[in-house]
Length: 159
Image (cartoon, rainbow, N blue to C red):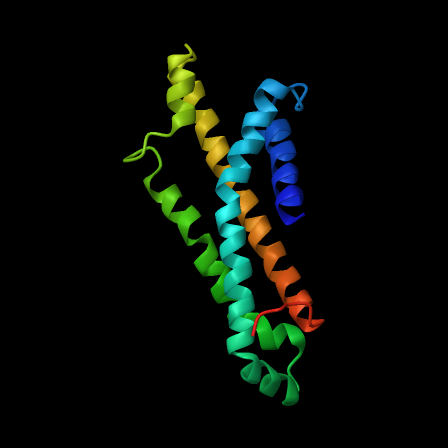
């Protein structure tokens, strides 16, 4: 559900505002965009869920101690949650750092080979990469919130 919400939200917003597609749901453009977002953000969300649940299980006594000393749930989990978000977003940020210089993205090459002007291909690729980053970021934050809420209610099965 997290994948669906984060990817569809960013795909719709990106198609409407960044790529200016009319109508935004045109299947020949919207489905490939959604596929690229799903493919890239799945790794970040999976890493987040695993790392968050592992941290909660490993550092449970520390969290309970903070809560016992009067910290709110947010204050108790904040250091662990920020570290999980930072680690989960690292692959996407590293991809951004080399995009266009070392790595020639497939979308841009495909558009150039299809006969589109190079500037249009570059702008399209940049929009897609920023949409991937936004989708991963939204999904990672949602995954942390859901993981903490699930763990708090005792719904995880890890020991």
